[in-house]
Amino acid sequence: METTDVYTRYAIAYPSDGLTITGILQIPAGDGPFPVIILNHGYHERERYWAGSGTWMAAEFLNRRGYITVAPDYRSWGESEWGPSLFHTGLVADVLNLIDSLWYIPQADPSRLGMWGHSMGGGITTKMLTIDSRIKAAVLYGTNSADDADLIARWGRGCLPGETQYTTSCNPAEVIPADLPAEIVDAYLAAAADPVMLQQIAPIFHLDNITAPVQIHIGTADGQELNATPPEWSFKLHEALLATGKQSELFVYEGQGHMFQGQAWVDMISRAADFFDATVR
Image (cartoon, rainbow, N blue to C red; front, top):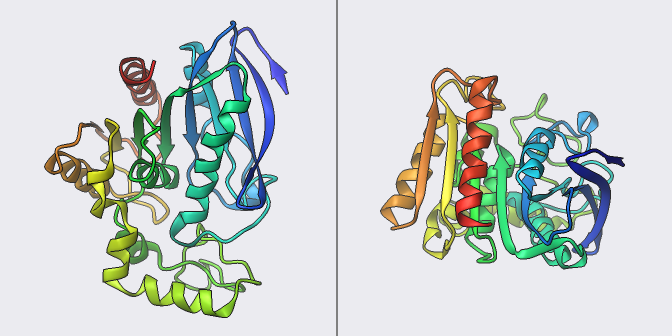
C-alpha cells in the first residue's frame, strides 16, 4: 500500500474460523527479524470504519522503535467476512488465529510478541491474556471492563438482527448473524442474563491464568459519553491483577477522555514503547 523511510504498509488477509479476516501490516525499514505488536482497535460504527482506524498512529510510532505492527479488522469490520461473536469470543478467535498466521511473515519473530488494545480492543486483549501465554506483555488504553457484567449493564446484550442501539438498549459490537440457529441465540440471551455464566466468561475471574505483565492507561474524563469507558473499569482491573499477584502498572491522565490528545497521547505511546522494549524486545 505504501513505503516510507519508516515502514512498508500492506493490506493483509488471513483465515479464522472458516472466515477471511483482513487488516493492516506494517514492517519497519531494515532486515529484521523484528518483534511484533498486535494492535487491537476499539469499537467503530462499521460503515465508518476503515482499516487502521484507531491504530495507525500507534503503528507508526512503534515501527520507528523497530516493531512490526499488525492491526486486524476482526470479523464484520473492514473487508472481513461476517461470523458470530458472542461476548466478543469471535473477535478473540480472530486475534488467536492472527498469532498463528504471524509465522508466515519472514521478517517477523512471533516469539517476541506484545499486544496493545484500545477500548473494545483492550477488552479483547484482556481476554487473550487469560488464554494465550504467547503474549509477552500487554498495554490497555481506555479499556473495556474485564467483567462482562459491566459491559451488559452499560450497553446491554448484543443487538439481535433488526435491532440497533438507537431503537433498543443493545451492544452492536456483538455479532449475531441473522442465520445463527435459534437455539444458539436463546442460549446466548440466557447466558447474558445469568451472573454465574458471566463469571465463567469474564476474564476478571480468570486472572490466575495470566503470565504477561500489563500496563494500563486511563483518562479521568473517560466514560462521560455512553460509548466511552469509565475509569473505574481500569482501576478495578488493576487492583484485581495486583491482588492476584500479577504485574500491573496504571497511569492516570488528568482531564483526558476516551481518545488522548496532545502530550498525553505522546506520553502514553512512549510509555507503551518503553514497556515493550523492557518486556518483549
